[in-house]
Amino acid sequence: MDTTTTYDVIVIGAGPVGENVADRVVQGGLTAAIVERELVGGECSYWACMPTKALLRSAAALRAARQVPGAREAVTGDLDVAAVLRRRDSFASNWQDDGQVAWLGQAGIALHRGQGRITGEKTVEVRGDGTVTTLTARHAVVVATGSGALVPDIPGLRESSPWTSREAVAASAVPGRLAIIGAGVVASELATAFAAFGSSVTVLARDGVLPHAEPFAGERVAEALREAGVSVRIGAETASVKRDGDGKVHLTLTDGEQVEADEVLVATGRVPNTQDIGLDTVGLTPGSWLTVDDTLRVLGAGGTPVGDGWLYAAGDVNRRVLLTHQGKYQARAVGDAIVARAKGERVEDGRWGRHAATADARAVPQVIFTEPEIASVGLTAAAAAEAAGIRTRVIDYDLGAVAGSALHAEGFKGQARMVVDEDRKVIVGFTLVGPDVAELLHAATIAIVGEVPLDRLWHAIPSYPTVSEVWLRLLEAYGR
Image (cartoon, rainbow, N blue to C red; front, side, top):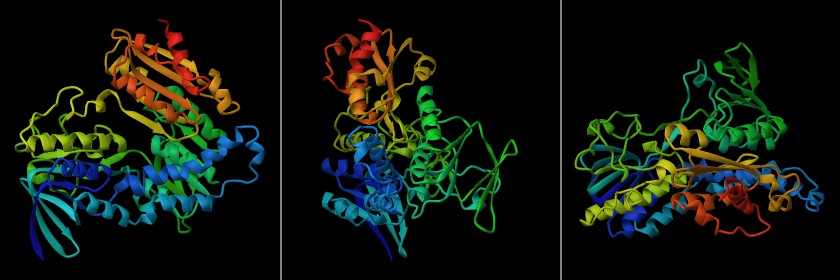
């Protein structure tokens, strides 16, 4: 059966980014259809953000209780791994998307199941369940197909049926021994989780632990992983992998050392899900990341918008920032920009304009839910001084020395770093390491996005006794 349907906007990909684009468009008075080949809700709902944090939270709560006298004595048992996995299942909706499909209907967004492929200007073909449906857009097509796990070309790795983040997050049983290739965010979080579940974990950290974070953050996480029994091999590189007839995985490192495990997890990066969405029909390379302008219009080889600017890309697929909340931020900007252009209204595409994803460059917040937590926003000290060419001053403070920290947990250990643009006297980077620092991050995000002068921040008084008092201590260390 072949049918044709027309909408104002067509979105390929029904993850959080695609859902938010479509919702924003509909709220702006346009019609929208969304195309999805897997589960509505995407990676974040079923294999990343939500189930990952569900895997980590129970052990974090148990550690927190054991760090407070009085609560510590009330803890009489160990982590119930089966209960953790059941909780994970509930946050992943047992890998059923009925609830999110119902939400699309309530929001007035049409859903087309199947593989979406661009076949021409403002045209998308959907193949699924033996049907072919041709969708046409009056105004725009938005690619929000996200990214998938990168499996590097290590001899024998693919043939060994490795886990990616999907298999690890959805695991129904805990392996006795888990080897992890990589030591970035995904690798570090899952090493934290499986070590708490009782696995013997080996992390092969060729480039160090959390290499893109402030160095002290990676060092503290590596230390905590080792204290939890994880073998962290800094500089270790995998030369080959083989799974034997008994199911055991054998990893040979470049120095000849052998590592044996029951499962191997690959967490070395991401690749764009653009291989089969018809990029070749608009002069782009299938399987490539999409380059966009600040209103998320896809740019061609000449640096100009594809066609008349009808093609957009939001979320991981444009490689600006591979974080769900940042993708949703882009979705709001691109949805509003499409509506404005459709209605002939002015597009505010200047720095910090309503339709520009300005925060992607220098104001990205991120929390890494390891033990300890890492919360950061903006630029690291190295990135500010080198890549951005900013004259900086770096202020560090022992987070454990703040009065509220001692109340929060016995033996509280942590660190805070403030990176200041000395010419403008504003903060351009902020990193916190320690227990439960995630909830402290938004204040720093506001300070950076709002470009609040340090002289004004002196008047933002942190409540006593809270961990947030670190703001006062950092300003004191900076000097007025």
